Length: 386
Image (tube, rainbow, N blue to C red; front, side, top):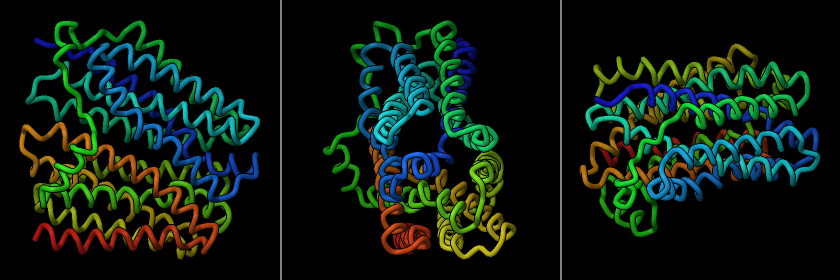
């Protein structure tokens, strides 16, 4: 019988690490703009740089963990994350800030090793529950991290970076001394990972329903990622929020999203078909995105953000469930790898496009284009699933 202790340890490590990520993410645009006079487009590239490294290194870490074991890859990733956050706090130039985010992105790509670790220590029938721990760690990290970052930023932009470095250092030490290896040496030669390749992508997209669902996931991620760099900027410039309050707004989004994915989605899934949840989530996300720049006052903004968080909290698990449902058992790994890659690509292109239209056309445009993309998703859902 497999022990539950490794699962608890991997959850703790992942949560602590993601808590650090949540601490710094709301302050990056203001940090770059105020301290280094970065343009809005440059800020978009800075925000996207983290996901770009994840796009490249997630399959690399996955393959290396198959050959070397999960533990060394997790430890190395955490070490790079610690270094990245230290540089974030010490940054004296925009170049140094980019290096910090690139290193943190490389380190953060070890999430594939964490997922593989869970697969190693769980039975097939318990795997979904085990993978849910990663989702829970993400949710909790995005709830508490921004609140902590909002409080710490009052002491300077470097303080949240050092706090995130300290948390990742705790996770690093915990992994060294408490995390056992999950992949036996005898299994390493034959282990497989959720690899992404152009051939795998082409094969997945050729399957009509699977291909369209994967495209929809990319569009959803891209549309929402339009606001990653620009929501903090519009919050400060248009709504006159402080950096502390921006952190609280991100925490508020994370809290409602966590409640939705952690509880509400289970209730709704009993009453409604997944395709209806997918459709309703897309509509709510589109409305939430489009109304952000037109929110008159804090109360209306909080209502709009609640609609947005509810929408994303419903649409993401519904889409992932539909993708899994329409993929054969033998295709699950490959399809999941393609899905992760397309999601990462959306998180790279979204902030860049959002920042570009924010600077060149107007501050409302990232939110309007994000809303428009989600409306396209609504139309495609109706055509694909009905």
